Image 1: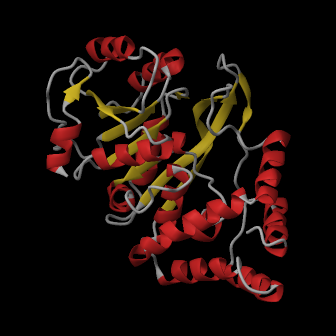
Image 2: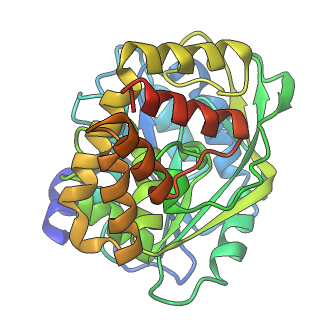
Length: 332
């Protein structure tokens, strides 16, 4: 990984050839920002990073084929607010999931914490501090993943509403069917980052990097720390690749996804990736995975029996009911 870092992440935002520091403090956070045509909103996010109460961080931006002129903005930020700790790399030009997984690999083998970061949000000043405080409680060597609610905002960052509070426990049985850990809120400890780095190539075709992170961390016996306090102002606008999921329109999109077979395709992709990473899964997670896969094939009675045995669930009753309907219709 040292060789990869020095070859790929070899320019700071001012264009100077420098290796990314691998020796860091015990609570250093490497912020991983995926960039694609985000110049219009990037300034606010960079400002919120600079304003963090937790000040021990470095930033890697991965540009995934942007057509706008983001470089002057990042250069000014690096010069004035983050000298010596802002780095840029070229993304794979293969979509946001691959871009973020590439960022995770570029974070290096020694950094103690890493945080995914979207280009168009704004972090609250306490975001990193709250995450580190929570992750300190995870036993050493156990994967830990912090995530939180968000404050959903309009294009001008005017607050609209809080994201839904999730009441059921985060677990692999939940991660098989939905993602409750938005990537824009995620902070990982070293053990969790190791999992994401080790499986990045296996997960290259998955729907979303954050859903995969939730799956592999819980599947490997890690701990997910869900914070009910919002730590991100989540900007909603026409260019969002994945928008807020708590509206009627979002619900209708989910129904359409089930009916069209898209949800089934997503599950198939995730199952295949998890099988490739099966050596990392706990015995209970392997059993859940196998039973969930069985719920997608065979006769109706066999599918329903397997779904019940898998123990999978969504956070809300209507979502879990939709799972059963999908199984009945062969769309799981």
